[in-house]
Length: 139
Figure (cartoon, helix red, strand yellow):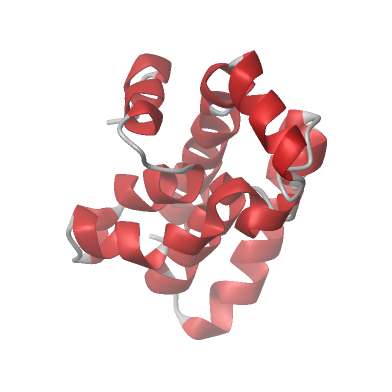
């Protein structure tokens, strides 16, 4: 079952990042527990801490790598990123948020504005919805 915006916001308030929420959504299906998937995705917050690729994207890419046969991984990863970019406008954290989290002042401004909690459930939900469709297509 897909998480709600409120559930995702609570996950953020509990200290989890976008990558952890996306990958954690698939933990049971992948044969992992949440602690394991949280460790796998720990370094993908805030676009890998430098405003680069959105954590929702990196969490989804880890799930793809763990879910599909190696010969289908590239095709599925590219399809995911194209759909995510079309839906969200970018795959880059700094472009999605409008803040560069590699700059401590901008990171603090993003936190103070509430945008991390208010906006970030949107790409997380998009990632889960896209990934559900792609993984269902893989069988």
